[in-house]
Length: 223
Image (tube, rainbow, N blue to C red):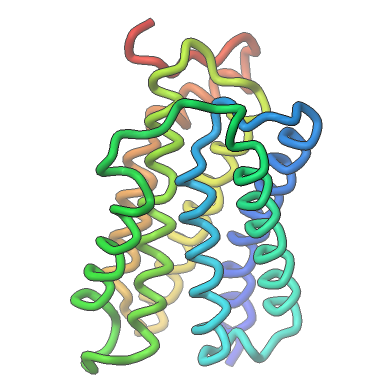
């Protein structure tokens, strides 16, 4: 089946883009020894998502390629490193998202959603963790977007980090489209990535304009 390599490539390349974004953020935090302007909830959300992915990836066709193993290992290390730095430098920030976007709310909510909306007909299956990963990743960026909405100006590397995360989700939307044409319909998961992309669409417009014209990126509703 010639479609399988392309399908795996699209899925993995999206996460490699996210890994690149995580490396950029690791460099920023290491350089400035601060997590000011960054959402701890976003990083914990991505850590929970990648831990879940470590479980269910072993039950999918991704096990057929070492490329996927390499990506998953690198992504897990990067998410773990970011979560550790957020814990270590927690004292450098006092800004957090609204309570209903904090990870202690979104993680249980995503798990409940995954239980009711997951691929397949079985109530209990590994597909619940697949859905949880996608839902948690979709919700995970919202606290970071909220913080940037309430900052006068978004720092350059933070803006590139968020931009790359959204690009990674867009690539995965292409993956879901490819799967649909192969006859494998994961509409619940596709919908999660669509919502993620729509919620960040205005930010992406500003980010791409910044890349084209230079200058500051002001995302605040107040300014």
